[in-house]
Length: 460
Image (cartoon, rainbow, N blue to C red):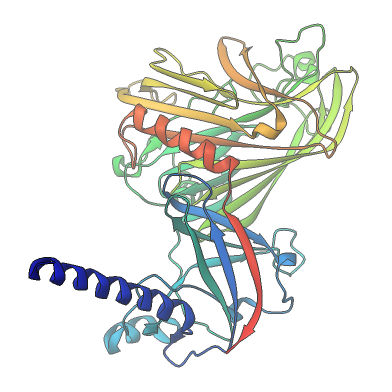
C-alpha cells in the first residue's frame, strides 16, 4: 500500500470514528440550555418507512401513550440531539426579548411543539411537533421534563372565527395557503403570494379576498353552488346513484324558493356552528358542526375537524356523524372538490386521490370594472384514506361538475380526508406538475405516518 493510500485509509478511519463519537456524544449526553439542566427525559424513536425524504412531517402523540400524566406546559421541552445547538443570544438580544429568550444550548436543539387540548377539559390531549426524516431513517429525539419557560414560538399557522360581511366564517391557514367557509359547508381557498398569515387581517378589517393588496395574495376559488376546495356530501338517493345530497341544498330550501346558495331559516333548515380548537403556532384546528340536515332521503348531523399544518399545502379533515338516519339502504358517505373550470390542463386520479388544475381567470364578482387576472395554474386535490375503499364519482351541481369519493359508512360513523391547493403565483410550487408530484408524495405520507415508539422515563 503506497503512502497516498495509507493516508487516505487512516483519514477515512479517523473521520468515521469521529462521526460515530459525535453521534454517540450527542445521543448520550443530556441537553442543557443556560441554567436549564433537566434530570428526566423520555426517548421518542421515530421511523420513516418510506423510501424518500420527508420534510416538516407532522407528528401527533396522544397523552395516554406516555408514562407520565401530570406535567404542565413549561415542563415539556423537545430536543433533537442531532441538530445544531443555538448559541447564547447575547446581552442585546436577551434585552430585546427578555427572560423567555432561548439561552445557549448544548447537546442538541430545542424544537417547537404544541400541547393541544382538543376536548377543552383543561388537560392536553396531544403532543404535536414537526420533524424532517431521511429515506428509511430511524432516529431518536427526547422529551426533557423540567421547568423551562423559554422559547418564543413563531406563528406559521393560525385559525379564527370572523364576523365576515355580517355572518360568521371560520378561517384556518398556514404561510402558503388558507381556507375559509364563506359557504358553511364547502371550502373557499386563499392563495398567498409570499409566506405570511392573513386571516386575522381579512376578518378584523373585513377585507374582500379579491381586493386585498397584491402581495397578500387573493381568493383563488369560486365556490358558488360547487363543492369548492372540499365539502361533505351523502349518496343517499338509491334511485339516482350519481347524484348527491348536500347540507346547503335541501328540500326546505327548494320549498322556500331560495335562489342564493345558502340555507333558509336555522330552525327549518340546516344550521351550523364553528369553534377554534387550536390556534397555532405550528398547527391550527377549527371544528364545524352541522345540525338539522334533512336531505329528503335521510336526517344527519355531523362534526368536521379541519387542521392546517405549517409549511404544507394541505388541510386534513376528520368527519364524525353524530346523527345518521338514512331512509334507504346501501347509502354512502362522500366528500368532493370542484372540477377545475375551463381548461382542465391537469387531471390526475388514482385509487384514492384526484387532482384537478389548469390556467384560470381570477374573477372578482364584486367589481364589474375589475380587469381579471389570468394565472398559469390553480389546482386543488382530494385524498381519502385507502382504508375507506373510496370510489371516485363525477357529480353535478347545477352547471358545475365536481369530483367526489363514495365511502361505505363505517361502524363508528367516521372517516378522514385531505384537501390540497396551490397556484402559480405563490410558494412553493410554481408549476402544476410540481404540485401534482407533491400531492402524490403527500398521499403516501398520509397513508404512512411516522412510526413512533415512546420510551419510559429515564433519570440522569
